[in-house]
Image (cartoon, rainbow, N blue to C red):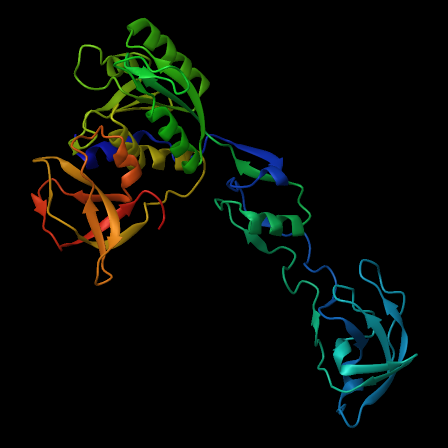
Length: 407
C-alpha cells in the first residue's frame, strides 16, 4: 500500500468515538477530556461585589467631590467578606467594605479608601465615582445558563478552576483508552536485567509507552514475548482481551521468526487491513482490526517504530480518548544538505534543527547509517517528508519539518 492508502484503510475501520465516558472527581480531572458542554447553573459572581477596599456609597452623593472640596458622608458600619450585609445605605451615608464583599442594598459604587479620610463616623470623599464604579455586577463574569466549556476541551489548571467556580465537585469526561504494549524477539531483554551477549535492551516498549501517554492513552506494558508461535499467540490474545488497542514491535518483516502478522490475522475479523507500506523507514508496518480493537504491529527498529507511531497510531489514540486529532506542529526551514528519497516509497528524513550565521532555521539530516540506530531518537527534532514521485530535496531548498514535539 501507499502511505495514503494505509491511512485511508485505518480511517475506514476507526469508529469516530471514544471508548466511553465516566464521571470523576474534579481533582482527578487534569488532562482529561470533557465529554459534554458545561453550562453554568449560577451567576458568577452570585452577587454585586466590591473590587477594592473602600466605602460603599450612592454614586450621586460623590458628584462634585474634589481634593480641595470633599464631600462629607456618614459611615453607617462595616460590610465583611463572606457574609450578607447587615446594613443598607441611604442618601448621604457610606459603609466600610473590603474587596470581595457584597455591595449593601442602596449602594451602587465603591469609593477607594485612598480617596477618603475618616474621622470616627465622618467620611470625607475627595474623588467622585460613577454608578457601578469599583464593583463587579452579579453575573458580570459568568451568567447563569451560559456555556462555559465545550465538549472535547482538555482540562488544565484554568479550566478546572472555572469548574470549581461553578461549584462542580465532579465532571463528566471521556475514559482513557487502555493500550497494551509488548515487544517481540529473541534478542530483546527488559531493562534492569543483565544483558547477555547478542541481546539488546527493550527500547521500543518504553519509548512507545511514553508516546501513548503523550497522546492521551494509558499504556499497559506486557513485557517481551519470545519468537514462539504458541507464546506469541497467547500474549496477543491476552492483549486484545485486556486493552482497547494493542501496539507490538518487532516480528513484522520477512524472516522465519517474523510471526506477528499471521498470528494477529487469525485472532478475529476483519483481521489484517494493512500489511506493509511503501514508506522509508517503516515499510513492514502491519495494522489489523480485531472486532472494534486496532492492533498496530510496528517494526523493531526504534526510529522506524516511533516514526510510524506518530504517523499512524497517535491519531487513533486521540480519537479513542475523545481528543481533537492534532497534526504535528511544523517549522519552516531550509535543507542543510541534499536529501534523497527511496525510489517508489514515501521517505521521511530525520532532521535536527539549528540556526546558521544568517539566523536561518536549518534542517540537517541526522546521519544514522540504518533505521535501527538508537541515537536517532535523541538527535532528531522532527522529519522532512519526501513524496514518492520526488527524487530528492536540494540543499538550501525550503522544507517543512514535522516536529516530534512543539518547539
